Length: 403
Image (cartoon, rainbow, N blue to C red):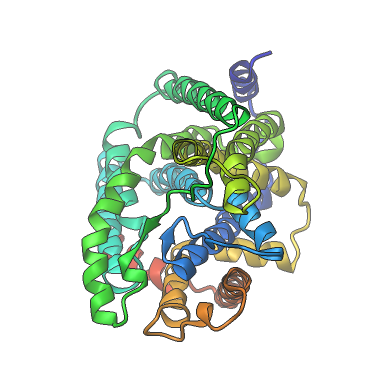
């Protein structure tokens, strides 16, 4: 049976009775909370090495293993998770408004206003904190989704499955080309093409701000095509695949296997090269990075499906799961908290901790994990007091008013 047929057979099964409340709420929030760890370890390497993606040019010892893991599991694999969950969230927001009695026109107005403010958030975020902002791009994508995709029927939304099947074929063909070039034994030892980021090496805050204002438009433009990933999130949300993960185990299992399989295999050549275990010529290195980026897009729904499967097995959420879910409900605040941390802890005019240790890769990962754990603890503290994250509070007030 094809994967497409498996999706359709599973999602066409009628739902008998509501899913348990804990199951409906747990998986999306758990995915968002765990997503922030992937984003943290990917972004921190970029900040430490002032590149995109961040890579130690000459790793040694354990740094080689860590660099390999970062390239294969995190670099170009964190933001697709963000994109899937963003698309999923648009459908969730629309449903909540409809349940409260809002008309379709009212729902559309709220979503457009919310995403317009998200674009503003992105600009401020980039200007003040971090060049690699995704909020502005997702604000634009969110407005397009609201106007073009939200009210479409199931038949229209099945188009995204065909598009992803074609894209998977393209990635497989590129993978075969890379494998053939590697087996042919190209000479040379060219480094992977990594982009330098000026704002991450600026020696003053004002100079970093000016650099970020110049970098943000181009970075935002590169993110806009990821509407294909957010559309996949909408497709999953329309079937409540994360609210009801136990009912969609077969689909989630296939999505996790295929998505993560393509991402891991496709990232393997670049990961080996980044770790210093594979040496190729310049043209092959460029193709490996193309394969790395293209295959990484499949990690988004692969990771999300894996989180859904984990949530389906949780019958009594404990402190760890509840804390991750609490962060997931405050993912915008957690994401912005990371940017503040990078500015203070890692940039040259801050504490520059990444350069104060003999192994910058290890230092960055320790800092990223520590920052993420801090957001988990803070989110749990806010959750116990029934308070939203500060960024969520501001965005809701701007989008909905005082109501």
